[in-house]
Length: 150
Image (cartoon, rainbow, N blue to C red; front, top):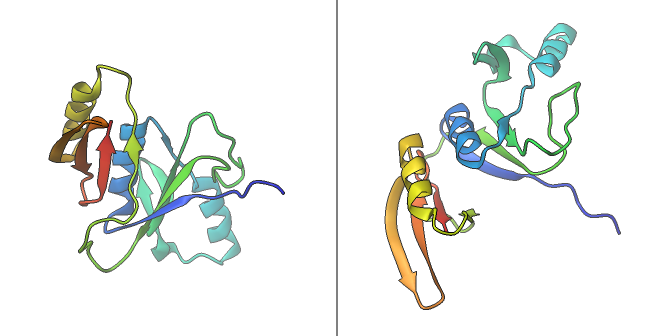
């Protein structure tokens, strides 16, 4: 059996701001779908109102992904073929605790510096946890989605 190709999809009010945050937080790249979008616009299958210009390039208005810089991607579309997070615009706000969240594992002795870096990017500390099994910091991204820094 071949392993499944998958991506994590996160609902967002502002997918482009979320992608910028998580790309910076993880050292990922924001996908450049501009060539694909230009092709779809040229074929008349994508209305121009579903696009925006972000960082001087065309992007889909309601979704954008970030990908690991070492993973393969399709050059014609810019779509990653490996570790990838897709942010999609939704009309409703986040209202409850996430049932799924990322844990960011940092080098020993660097957790406080990473937490500070995440705060400078727009994250907030919810609480610091110290238990016999370990210690970590529970944080939220700019839209309130939880993640942990260990």
